[in-house]
Image (tube, helix red, strand yellow):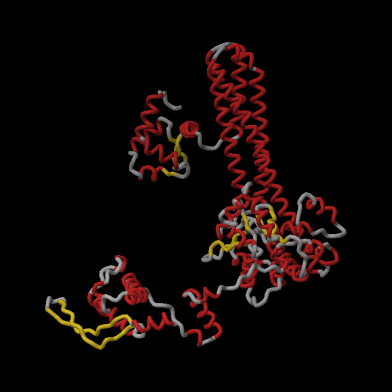
Length: 202
Length: 412
């Protein structure tokens, strides 16, 4: 049996190669033909086929707001500590991004130097940055660079231009937003719950 | 107008100075008199003439085209800013003219009515296209979120105004329908019909725009809300109560994205065959360098294939065939080996086999298959001509198939 028998798109392999690494496929990504892959998955006839195909090997395509990713079917949640640690760091990073004068949101472009500069000028930001645990990052600029690199490796950001070190925020950033929105804070849950109720998370 | 002018005058003036008019139309701001005259298209006299006709204005040494001229061009090319005010004016004018026409059924009012009806139709469509473009642009390109939000809200208001205009126009048309039928004017009928369908179409577009705006605003608002929440979470985290005051742990437990469940990408082993290829060797070499292994460095990459490798392939083919050749030779008894080779008709694919080639084949077979052959230790002579056409004689041993061996084989 070959891939043609399933009438799968030609790019199935590329899609798998990206998503099986745990990366996201965002609609506004440019590397590795990302936006093209997104369109292919998003096509009405392709999605159910790909879904069925990957379900055979227990991968499930999850659809978010302009992004896709894989989850495993029937998998026990192992290593919760590691996950907690990762997401705690994301909270730090998003908090930093949220506190910038020019807030970094989906689609915005920025350079690490800009963030470092703003942190330099603002004590609050400086403190936030310093408290983000990163190893081997002495200067502030290097630390911001490391953070951007980390986010880019998790495919939330994309290094758009290596020469100018300009990053772009991808649609997968929505994923982090959704996760944060899903967390409810006790004692004052009334205000935030109404926002989160309409969105389904997995 | 300062002077009594006619259409002909204006047109000829505009045409005569068309490069200047074009230049001024394209650069509507900040052109000084000196700049204009320095361009060389326009003499001082011509400039004064245009000024006297009021085609250009001069204010504090800055030249601009007459607004009426600019408006004419813009209207005709359907570019330029349309503001809701224009539509509003048109509607008011339309109402006024309808009123006049109701009083006195005169043709001049009817003409104005047609004009304004057309104007409304064009202006509305352009306004909507512009609105849609602006909404899109703002959401995608406006960097500052506060301005973005405000702009989108403004567009929402603008949209409401346009909807208001559409309803107003519809109402006016409906009210005067009887009047329009009364005029019995087919052109007017066509215009009104076109306008009506445009209005309906435009309403649909506006609804679409409204959804877009709402969607965009919601998305921005959502992001902002989440950002506020992220800051709040961070605060809680700094207090060290993240796991106790929120359902952080529970939420994360339900996250089953590959990346965060310690699922590594599928890893495959390198095929052993690949390691024997040149690419594989390079890979091995790199690994060897990394781990400082000298042993693996021995084997080099195969050299480049020579240009004539195809010919060499033919040589090889002859070699490969020798075994078959010998077998055939062994089955016959008529010729000795030398004669056999000299007379043997090689297949065409091998190409032309020269005397030298046959000779080397003879030596090769004699050496490699000596066990199968019977050496007579007698010389025969062979006469031939070499390249320079000289007569030569070659002595060779008579070699026959080994009959005894065959017999013994049969006996066995």
